[in-house]
Image 1 (tube, rainbow, N blue to C red):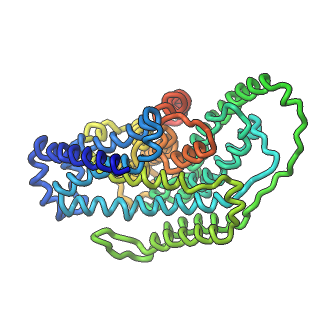
Image 2 (tube, rainbow, N blue to C red; image 1 turned 90 degrees about the vertical axis):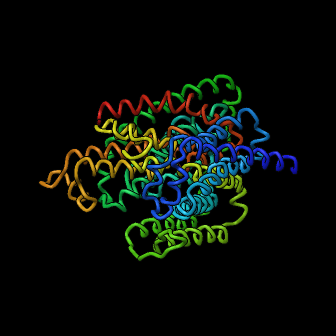
Image 3 (cartoon, rainbow, N blue to C red; image 1 turned 30 degrees about the vertical axis):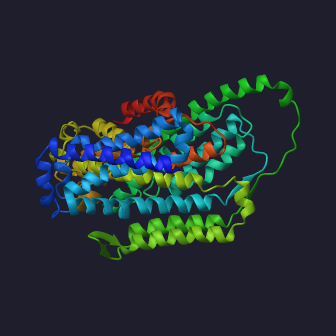
Length: 498
């Protein structure tokens, strides 16, 4: 252990020194801009940062992709250190070059984004871990398709994370005896953890952010319903035929076993009181969007009372679930804390290293990605660019960036959003309506393209691996599943709607 720590510290010191030199040798203006930027929180940091400051973010993504494949034992024991390495590789030179502005950016992303993200994930993970679905659940193609459909419909009302945490264990239990089941988990990520959450602001963070910026609550339900139904229907049909193919192959190999009559055990749901706590979490999230209770500052970061209440309330809901749910129920679910610990450690590094990418994107035409932003003109561009970036970056700020870009292009203010979206009225703006449909669908749908595209994706992967399923690597998931299956679906959606 001491050896590993010593090597880690040595490599960190060397690479941080090299990366720090890049800040100054590549662009000497960066150093002088640091002091100036310190007085303007977030005002121009994205205009100053060069593209290569995203290297640590690319590094942590490559680590997640390659280490489990090439050095699985090392990764299992040291993924927290690897995450910390990339985080510090960016944070130390960033703080040295930009002083208080860098400190503000780091504090802001952890207080506003990371901590609420982990609290919500922990609360839903804890509560769902106390809900046990038992009985004769046999993972036939029909049952699997029905369970995916239920999860897809549930996702818009309890959130993709809530639906994923509630449904993943019953799905895994039903398919425990199946040989081929990786595809079941991947389609689960496509539908339950992403596309299903596109119908309300409760479904996915970017839509909730839109709700906070004056998009009417049920606008997205009417606007995205056709897109969601088309994508979900295609994927469910594809899944049914793929699962049927694998199921018949397995059944033919074990004909003798299949002829044995198994005792039917009635379907039973235990830990029902956890649905009360789940409803409590959903209510707290909804209230935080409607209630404007004022704010206070922590080290220059504006903290809102309603958000603080939401986060404390979610912790209370999770704690109540722990108190009132017996350990036997959690053991029946093969519940362990490893998945949430893994996600917390890895995303602590991801949220740190993602700072320059989000800042540059937010700078729009004044940042290093100005060329990319300038290309976004038509609905098809909004759909694919928002979606492509949401596959790797946090989809909430990506949504907000292109939401504001669309407003600017059309000369609309945020206050005019409700009337501009009121189809059939004289104040309606057809162009903005189409743009926002494309942005909303892209941000939610394409979060399924990678394991880090949306909060529950990595959690579902981790829970599946805990259950003994050999899930594909980061790139394996993309090459074998998301690219060949999802991209054609999104092309169809584009041709029909955009």
